[in-house]
Length: 229
Figure 1 (cartoon, helix red, strand yellow):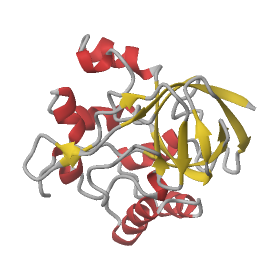
Figure 2 (cartoon, helix red, strand yellow):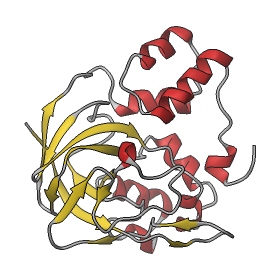
Figure 3 (tube, one colour):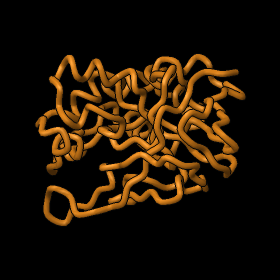
């Protein structure tokens, strides 16, 4: 089933970033031709901190182009918002958002197969990229965070390719529903057990397991602000 279309494909190299000893590949640029896709993502793409970015569970970052006008209304006509890539996405897509995409969805784009693995949890690097001190928190609070794909079947894709849904095993769990549990600091044991029955990535599983065990939400200061809790 056709559910969307790739507007732009983007890749970037990891370079020194805005703070001492930090590296980032958030500054991604359009690729006009077909790009090969393997288990670690798009050929030619890099991540600055492999502890929290990249890897098979976060191989490809997707961000809806429809969010850009909303951000422009809220933040003004920032240069970074004039073209896809502001959020470090690999695929800028039309026709999809976090309310329409479910955990575990299986997609076909070009000749490659993907599984929706998790929503993005924004970090402080967005604050520096946008020059907005609380940008990461704004992204989290808005729910307009984008999401990650796991590569189920290597292949190739390009701008203009259709996004086709092949299978939706968890229709009751759109990404925004899971993300709302995180941002609203939900610790209800019954809900947490329900979420933990889903095919979560290791990082999301640890988050919800810790909430279940501790009965409290985690500290976000290091991720959102770049400082120690």
